[in-house]
Amino acid sequence: MSHMTVNQRNQFERIDLSVPSTGVQLRGKRALTVTTLIGFALVAVMAYASIERLDSWHRIVVLAAIVLTVIGAMIALNPNRRA
Image 1: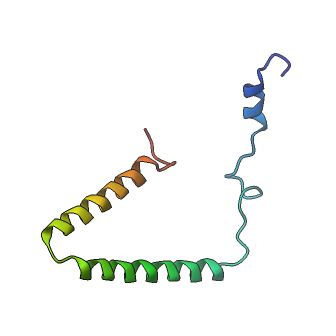
Image 2 (image 1 turned 180 degrees about the horizontal axis):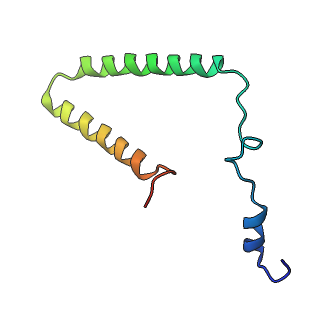
């Protein structure tokens, strides 16, 4: 190890977050479930409100373009995506 650079040494000493003993530990699922349900309800209310406001096809096209752009960004920025 004496002939390694700092970057090479850091790769060996890096913590592996896929091992169950390291990384984020979740103690209870109740808070996660409640937060998820609140999030889904909020998204549903906002989707209903936005659909009610769409009175012309121009606004529908713009909203669809925004949604498709967000989905494309989510796919492009996915850390598990294979190149």
